[in-house]
Length: 233
Image (cartoon, rainbow, N blue to C red; front, top):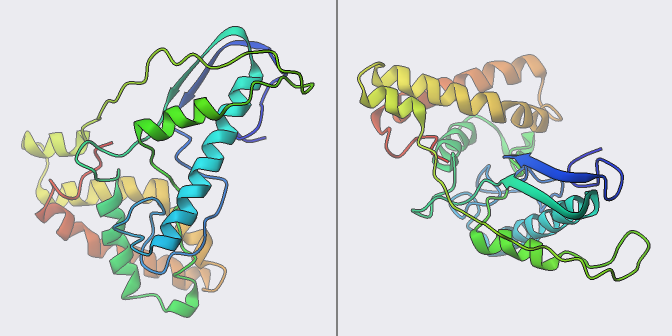
């Protein structure tokens, strides 16, 4: 089972909690000819491609909220932490991801699957989040209208500062150490998806060497501009 379907019997929970998971989609909006991160216009300047991923993000969010709705008993509470767009309009980890993409673009042939190398994430606005709860069906599991609807009590925005950058500002690490730590964090989350995409057309040993070179090439640019290349969320 996934979080996009009920994980427990209907009306069996009084409390449900989801922590920073729903930005990862199960739907696929299409290949990206110009980046890695599906939700960010920096990576997806093509309107038709971006709109396809936007629709995928909306559909998956509605599916997720409906699944949680079915699990909760009357009067039950859902608490969720959802990754969203930052207050300055940037997307989390996006500029780091675009730096990685540029390094890949100079090393990977188009025919080797770069277009299908996608991090299938969608970062949501406050309006996106609320829309999902408004779309939730009132029908119970037998198709009867039981009048149950979501009552959204709180929808708050919080931004988490990158702790690695805080260490740099305190003088605990050098700029190059900062660059390496940032790229290591990005790699830990994103590399399995990237490698899975490229391994369909590339030799695994060759791919491992290539990605080592890609990540190494990103370290100094990140260290030179830590305010731009950070992992704030």
